Length: 101
Image (cartoon, rainbow, N blue to C red; front, side, top):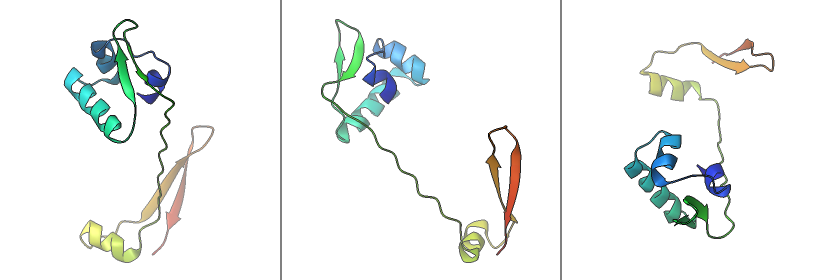
């Protein structure tokens, strides 16, 4: 969504919603949510695209940490499965890493 808006390549609201795989109503809900977070999104009827009225960027952060044994018991109802993480390698192979409690 951000990339298309930045590139001024969204098309009409119907086209934009279709590209995102959402309804037109859902598109406007997403736009309203972004606006509530400071995104200056506007629509140009003459160019038929959404764009940012002024420079705008999005930053997304994600923090992951392993669960403790107590957390694992809490969230699995006491049933502990072996904790296995899978990592996709550059060669599209999957390697396995086991973490013991």
